[in-house]
Amino acid sequence: EAGVVQSPRYKIIEKKQPVAFWCNPISGHNTLYWYLQNLGQGPELLIRYENEEAVDDSQLPKDRFSAERLKGVDSTLKIQPAELGDSAVYLCASSLGGSSNEQFFGPGTRLTVL
Amino acid sequence: AQRVTQPEKLLSVFKGAPVELKCNYSYSGSPELFWYVQYSRQRLQLLLRHISRESIKGFTADLNKGETSFHLKKPFAQEEDSAMYYCALSGGGKLIFGQGTELSVKP
Image (tube, rainbow over all chains, first blue to last red; front, side, top):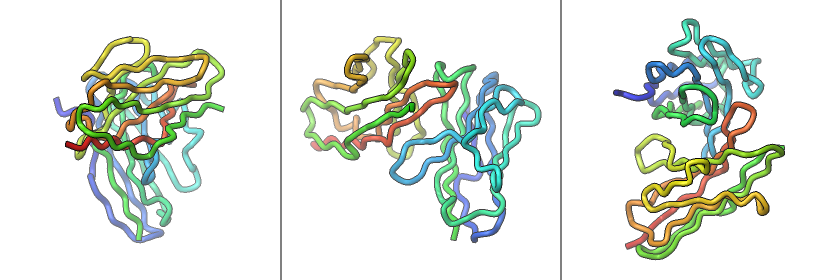
């Protein structure tokens, strides 16, 4: 099994441009997470989905960030417009349900905003 | 506030030496704690969790509620243990990660 799939793996854009990241979780995992990882830091949760419902988006900067998981399977995270400070690794993870269960991480998307 | 602190950004030891990666947490309820590891060019993965009370790759971690710590230990470090290690706390339906400790095991 491929595990959690993310694309693209790398993205370089200029500031003020939009960007989107895609994640396909492990089949059967109803919980999906998007994390932000800045250089030298641990991952920080942006948003958590239970099926298609965003149950925790308190850390998502909603003025420029948006996410969706329309059919409760794959998910897209968007930034519009991107700022220099958004340069980071964006991680997607999935689990069978609840943070007590093991989370399986994707390889991440490394975003560079110039 | 819920918080995980890993005081060491880098820990360098020689092969065969004991290793202890420190983790302290702040949490008002009954915590669930984990250690995640990221080897070079690999994705982040679970190493162990405190409720399992198991040893994985020779690593163990004991939850000390009095000291609010969950240190990761291994008696004899191996070169293949070199990686980034993250302590994480499960709270409010999400994982809260520490800043990570890079373990470097020298031959």
